[in-house]
Image (cartoon, rainbow, N blue to C red; front, side, top):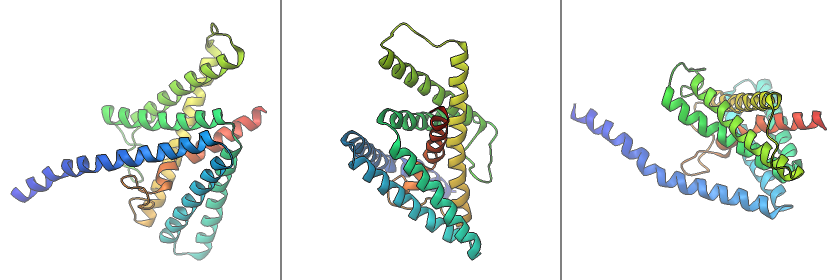
Length: 238
């Protein structure tokens, strides 16, 4: 009984002791990303290339651990190269303000989904793949993405037109809500995909490269499909 109580008491302490490492790692990652973005080319292109390379290496290692069949393994590696590489190419061609819009949307999805899911709980989306993901969290992600996109689009449109009095009409609000929903679903799909792959590989994180956060793939899993979605929408609108 005493051993069980001791082990239970140690769990929160372990999480608390890991928090400073996570915060420092997060600040370093943000500083590097913002620095590369502000510096512009070629630094930003090199930064994207480094992230893509690290992500693909981690993906490769996961696929090797998750598959025994050689043809399936080769097919997975080829699909991953296209999936990850295409996202890198698309991101490198985005203007700076679009990069900010896409990254901000994914961050808002993650933050709103996390806190809404913890606050409301409820049914899981796919407990066998990712036990922490709930329908309430997905709804929070939709709200977060919609809030971010509404603010981002409003500020961008106002800066372009110079009109500070124009607000969204009903049809535009519906479009922004649809964009928010699509963004949240895409981000969560990317997260589920990596979670499924890690379960197949029998690992918790894609690597231990980032202290307190796991690997690079763990940090960009939701970003990849959102980048591809944004690229497809902008390409169709051009």
